[in-house]
Structure formats: structure tokens, C-alpha cells
Image 1 (cartoon, rainbow, N blue to C red):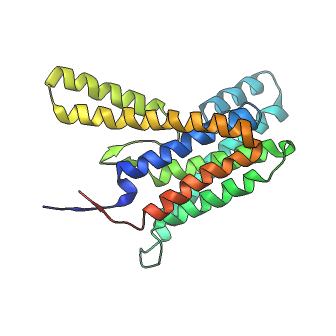
Image 2 (cartoon, helix red, strand yellow):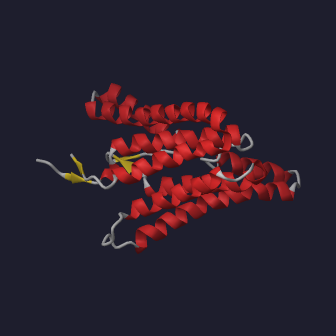
Image 3 (cartoon, rainbow, N blue to C red):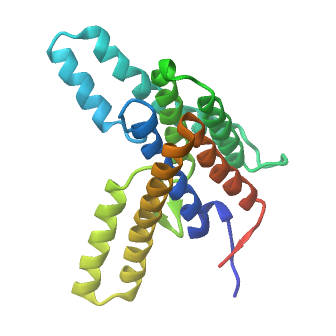
Amino acid sequence: MKIQKQMSESMMLAVVLAIAGGFMDTYSYICRGGVFANAETGNIVLMAINLSNNHISKALQYLIPITAFALGVVVSEIIRLKNNEQGMFHWRQISLLIEIIALVISAFMPQSMNLIVNSLISFTCGTQVATFAKFNGYGMATTMCTGNLRSGTQSICQYFIHKDKNQLQKAFSYYGCIAFFILGAVIGKYTSDIYNEKAILVASSMLLIAFVMMFVSGKK
């Protein structure tokens, strides 16, 4: 029996989003001041270090992308709660459009505005994490790897202990997401070297592909 499944939870879409996620992290590091804008753990630690050293103004600089990430989560949740699924677009597509616009704006900002650019990328990642939290029935992130590495490794252990092939498939899904994140990072490195600030348009194009893909209904 064929069961209707949202394309927004398919592994095919996870692949596209993971490539975009890896690209954004590499771009922010290479082109925008040597920072990783996707996950906020580093920013929180650096903010705490500067607070402990009484460098208040510098600590507040790290608070901006942290707040932007949280704002992205808030925006995603508002869109989800307010959307009645009766319009032309799925609520997740609306979130993607906002992400695309944020990245396109980033492409035309100079180096003097790196803090704003990294905040826009953090906002995009917060929106993406909150909007696309599950693929193929598995909780999975496409803008960071730590959780996927943990879950994939746990599944491998479960497979060797219980010989459950479903756990092996689950592990491949998590490790596959990490692999495509790495691919996105590699693409980000080479395109950033060539196109500099404008390279982020590649990531926005990947999100546009994801947007178009969601017009197709998945089948399980």
C-alpha cells in the first residue's frame, strides 16, 4: 500500500538542505570573519568568556547572532501556527522563502557588515532547524552535525547489539546527512574562493530547489 508522505520530511529534501547547511557554515567562516554561524554553542561560549573578562561590548556582539538564531525559531513557529494550509504554499515553503530572501540580502553586504550577515545566516539556520526537524521519521538537523553524529552512532550500536536492520538503515540516514553536509562545505569552500561575498547565492539557490521540490507529494 502506498502511503502519502510530505516531501518536506523526505530524505531527498534532507540532502538538499544539508548541502545548503554545510555551505552556509563554510561561507561564514571563509568570507565573513572566520566564524561558524550555523550553531550557536561557540557564540555562547565566546560571549561568556568576554563577560568574564568584563568585555561587555564585545560580549554583546556575540549576543546578536544568538538572538537572530532564536528569532528564526520564533518566526518558523509563528508561520506554522498561523498557516491554515489553505493557501498556495505549504507553511514550510513560506519559511524557505524567508530564508532565501535573507541569504540574497547577505550576498550584497560588504565586509564591514559581517556581523549583520552572520546574524542573517544564524537567523536562516534557526528557521531551518525549527521548520525541518524530522526526515523519514527521524529527528535530524541539516545545519549542524553533532546531534546526527550521536544518533547515527547510537543506531550503529543498536544494530550490532540487536541485529536490527532498521537501526542500520537509521544510521545510514544520519551519516548520509553528515556526508552531504560535508559536500556542501566543500562546495562552499571552492565557490567562496572564487565569488567571495556573492557565493552565498549558491546556498539560496539550493533552498530555492528545496522550495520547488515541495510542490511534489512524496510516496512511501
